[in-house]
Length: 110
Image 1 (cartoon, rainbow, N blue to C red):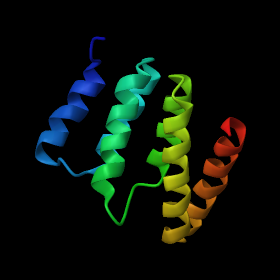
Image 2: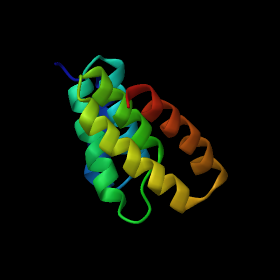
Image 3: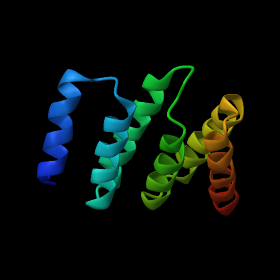
Image 4: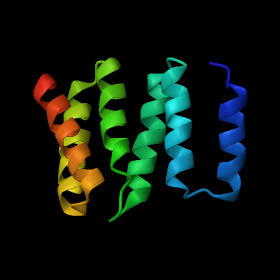
């Protein structure tokens, strides 16, 4: 699938800031919006792995959704459960909001 100018721009910025979670998330969303859930999930899984003890919580939900669209429910369940644990550990208003969304998606596929 051809890369959009926006994808190319984000990838160029990632060269200078390879650990920028927001840029990686944006790149994944560009892939998802173009219908490339496989690339979106790859970028999101990479983002999650790079997060270490401070993961980017929204990545878990978006990755779970992309994996469900790909028919990879088992992997989606794994990602969502990890995201739920991460959201609880972060214990911020934003992560607790994401917790509800993660749990909701998990409930629909289990």
